[in-house]
Image 1: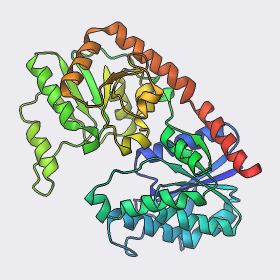
Image 2 (image 1 turned 180 degrees about the vertical axis):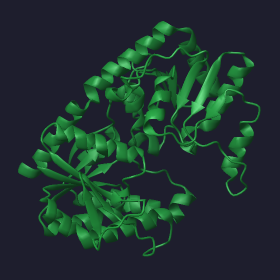
Image 3 (image 1 turned 90 degrees about the horizontal axis):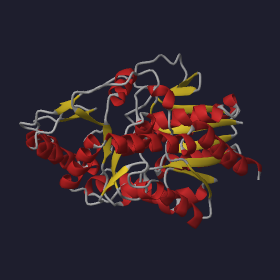
Amino acid sequence: MRVLICTSFSLDKPSAGLNKMNDLISSLKLYGVETYISGFKNQDINFKNKNYEVKGDKIFFKFNEKIYRHSKSLSINVNTADFYYKNLDKIIKELSIDLIIVYSTFSTLIEPIINISRRSKIKVTAYVGELFNFSLKYLFNGVLFMQYKAFFFSFKLLDGLICASPSWESYAQKINKKFVLLPTFINLERFKDFKKFNNKNFRIVLLSNLSKREHPLVLINAMRKIEKLNENVELYILANKPKYSLLNLRSFFLRIKLIRLKNIFFTGFLNNYERDKLMSSADCFVLLRSPDLESKFLFPVRIGEYFSATKPLIISSVNPFNRFFEHKKEVFFINKKNKHSELVNAILELKNNAKLSKKISNNARNYGTKYFSKDFLGLKVLKFMENILYK
């Protein structure tokens, strides 16, 4: 079986989406499935009078920014769709593709790929994850149009859905589509070579771009209270420090809130080795979410990374997390209201209770090994694809 994953993101720039699809590729490889992934290349490349280049399991194409410029999101999808309009037929024939997975919840990418694939009698599925909340930003930049057209129309044209969360499973059942659940992958190999760290301070590591949905102010206020209590706790954030910029008032406000906080450190960009090393040094991780539409439909890839590092995770008790895990078993839940005082109590309890911390860490590792492993999920996706192709 030969599978093509069609994306609208860069294949040479690290991202959660790329990491997850690379894990999917390697999981399917365990069962003899040859999988390719297509996406654009940020770096300059000479395609030698070709529109794309195949390198191993990657198909690179050049992103053309000049075709449509309403917004970045809409531009990326429409321009990427233009590439597939012109080249997907050729790629299908050249690589003898049997099935296509579209990595998108946007109609502007899904529908063109369905139309082109149908001409070659190729089955099409989609990996579905984010479903954004309503906002004026998403209304005006076209995101709401693209995702809700897909939700109410485009997905019904597919042969099946690869679901990031149980909410997508329920949706697939409602529209009478075949589905498989693919929340995240665990990868213990990434962390096996790092030695045990003996930190002077209790260390929290956060993989975050400090977006609004991650409640950075809750964590900042929690750290402020912890410093007042003279507790030896430090926070490392794998992101750039917010800037004093009047062009970005949210960044400006976050920077002000960081004033006089001594134990919060920003790493900026880290390569994969440095990133994994810092994660290995953590005493715990934190992941905050609200009980909203975005949280309900998306299962963050980083949960698999946190479980792989075998350190306890403090996480908001919202759907879908509370449908997978139990409090003080695989994770440490705090209330969905995300009060900074409760987060403080959770951090200090793990800091002062090494036995509990180890128990949660080991349970998370065991849970991930059982349900998020490449052999387990790869087999599930394989059976799903066989069900589409051969039944």
